[in-house]
Image 1 (tube, rainbow, N blue to C red):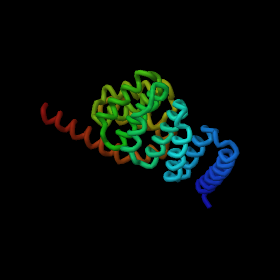
Image 2: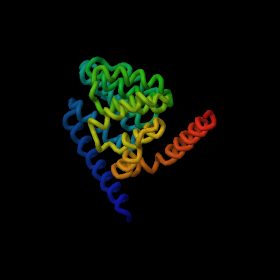
Image 3: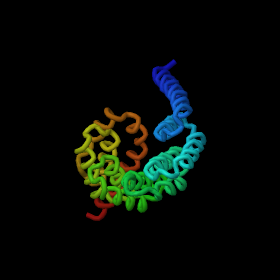
Image 4: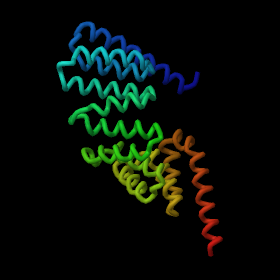
Length: 228
C-alpha cells in the first residue's frame, strides 16, 4: 500500500467519524444550524453531494425564519453544487446572497463561470468581489487566471505579482506567472523552478500548456524574424 493511499484512507476514515459525530450532534441539538453546515462540508469531502444537498435543503426549511443562518446555509449549498460541478445551480445560490456573504459569493460566482469557460463573465464577478476584498489572495488569483485565459498578459502579470507578494510560496501562481513571462519576453525560469518545488502536481499538469506557450512564442519570433 502506497503512502498516498494510506493517507487518503486515513482522511476518509476521519471524515466518516466526523459524519457520525455531527449526526449525533444534530440528533441531540436539532437547533444547531452550524452542525448542519459542518456536516454538509464533510459530506462534500466524501463526494456525497446528493446527501449534502438534501441536508442543506432540509436545514434551509428548518431555519427559514433566521436570515443570517439562511445566508450561510445558502452559501454552503452553492459550494455543494460547485463541488459537484453543477455550476448553473451553484451560481443561482451565490446570486441570492446578501451583503455579509456578497464578497465570498461573487468570488464563487467568478470561479463557477471560469469553470464553465466563460472567462469574461468570470472576470466581471472577480472584479466585483475585489471591491469588497481588495487584498484577498484567492480573488486576485482568479482575476489573474481569467486575464491569462483571455490573453491579457500585461494585466495578468500585475495580478500574479500581487498574489506572489501575499504568498511567495504559491506554486500555482508561480507556474502561471512563468507562462505569462514567457509570452512577454521576461525571465521565467525561476518561476518554473519554484512551481516545480512548491506544487509539483500542478507543475506536471501544466506541461502541455507550457509546450503550447513555447510553440506560440517560437511562432511569434519566427514572424518577427520574417518581417525584418
